Image (cartoon, rainbow, N blue to C red; front, side, top):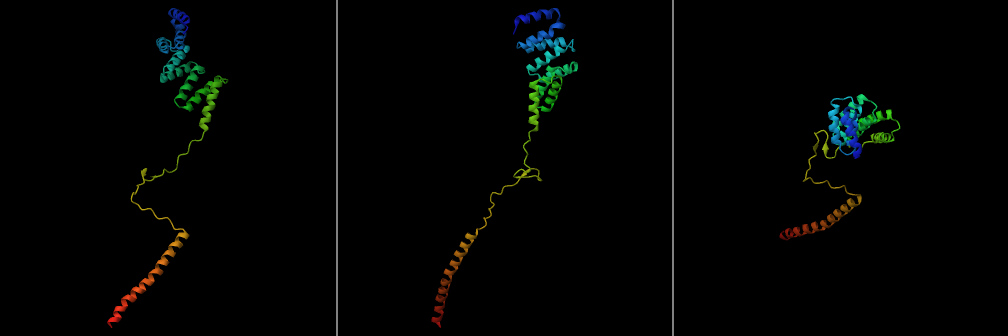
Length: 207
């Protein structure tokens, strides 16, 4: 902080507060004491609400201490006094961008560029906003697996004891199974014939 400059402005402020309150408050703001700047501006702007530079210093000080809602109101009030004030337009655009409102931010930045078309920093910001808005959003899935869209998003019940269906047999496996069954039948026939002869023999002996 430039203390010599601060003392000079303080002396002039005491002599003529209406003229020097804004420079004094701005010196406090730039020196890292925005709260002191806010105190000075509030007192003086209550008597002189149409003081343009006082409104700008007030808004900047509020912005720096994080009082964004009040800072927004002050900057918008300043624009009613000077619709092309670059500091107010830039500050409103930055606050809108920080809050995620890119549409509003682009509107403020566009107004600033109407007043100052050569502001390269703001031109870059507008280009970034437009590029992000043109990016295609990720498409949401049409159906959510496991959810019945017609049943109030109720999950499909899971049946823990359900037996899964056996996969279909390939031609080779089916032929092998048929051969094994045929061999089993062929081996069973002699046994059946032998058993029948064994049962028939006692009946012949009895006759």
